[in-house]
Amino acid sequence: MTKPSLPDAEELLAALTAQMRPHVTAQTGLVGIVTGGQWLAERLHRDLELEVPHGSLDVSFYRDDFQRKGLKHQVTPSAIPFEVEGRDLILVDDVLYTGRTIRAAMNELFDYGRPASIRLAALVDRGGRELPIAAQFVGTMLALPAQYNIELKRDAQGRLSLALQQP
Amino acid sequence: MFLSSNPQLNKHGELHHLLSIEGLPAAILWQILDTAQSFVGVTQREVKKVPLLRGKAIFNLFFEPSTRTRTTFEIAAKRLSADVINLAVNVSSQSKGESVLDTVANLAAMQADMFIVRHGQSGAPYLIARHVGEDIHVINAGDGRHAHPTQGLLDVFTIRHYKKDFRSLRVAIVGDILHSRVARSQIHALTTLGVPELRVIGPKTLLPSNVDNLGVHVYHDMAKGLKDVDVVMMLRLQNERMQGSFLPSPQEFFKFYGLTADKLALAKPDAIVLHPGPMNRGVEIDSDVADGSQSVILPQVTFGIAIRMAVMSILAGN
Image (cartoon, rainbow over all chains, first blue to last red; front, side):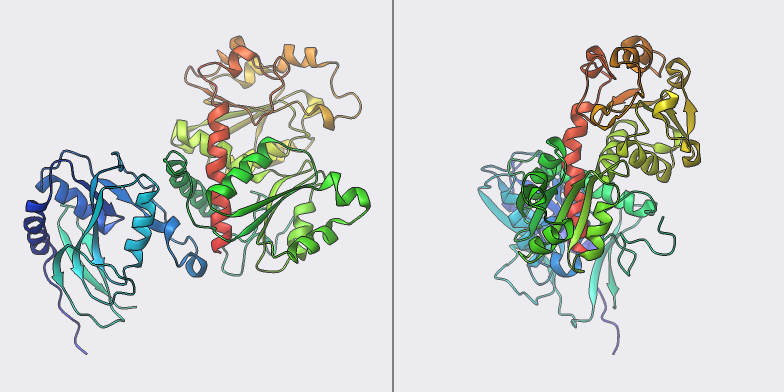
């Protein structure tokens, strides 16, 4: 089987930014999921000229697979540098797949307060949902065989790219 | 003590019980400190809880009285959404003659997932860890004179918070080293994390005879020992553990080894002062210092919760 080819992450991000622009205000709170979503949130925050600082979430303490996997990787502190209560939020992640990460992220966000709304932006939606979760803003849809993982990378110049991992 | 295999680690080399800092690889200490850092953020939120250990039963098994340690373990478990059961065993089954292992076996039969053990005898948590089922985790919350690993960890966490890098630090531990499980855990933690100069200061009668084997510099004079240190770690004078005459009197101890503003002035101007509590004001530490600007004694208590959350969640996931 030939290796699937991946789209250019910078082009997807430009498309995602254009999609989101009409739907945000300066007070919209962006929350990136560590680490790929956090990089995207940084860029979106700058390009959409939002006033509220962007936040980041590491959902390790909220995952539903803790029983099986434990706390293996390095946990980064979550940082939400704005008032969540009553705010319109947009969660940002690099790849949307089963939806379990997003569920964990929403649970964590509610522990900071009660947002007015939460929308979801993803650079890549690869289908395969196991929960009733949908993204409002999507860079691209991409069908991939289950054995592949896609990961967002960032080089020293800050340029984003997608990489394929085969377990 | 355990050269061939460390009873704290599982077959993958991961932490299964936390019994002592001695013999733990630095990578595990860093993992605990970094995970605790993430929990500090959690405890500053509106909702100070995460669902990580929901449905787990954690038994605080205290064969020796303690308020602060027991309470911080209890808070830590509750912030992880676990169910906590507090048992002061010295006043219940032990007085009826039940053995430690029988007590533990009964609690395990109540589907315990984790035991937090404090015991007056060194090694008691090891005994319990050896006899529980393999899906049960044991944390040593202080055993005799041997170890108090979560205290040692919260101390190094506090030092990292204020001083950032261990590799340039001069640290002094002051007071009753002989009776102190805290001091032993601090020495192992600081050494493992790469502190280049570690000093212990105390009267000859309160220093173990083999203390220099631990890689520390020994001082009997505060003026010399505190010179230019970055961190001063005071210990409690363990009155209840003293039988016989180690000291002429607490007043005499304060005169020579009590931390006063004058003595602290010999350390670096930005030196921090730690104390594991409970403090004997006017015995090992002067109130001016305990409440002064260089004291980080209350932050230690706050960080202790994050450290215990980190240890519990790492154990439960391994």
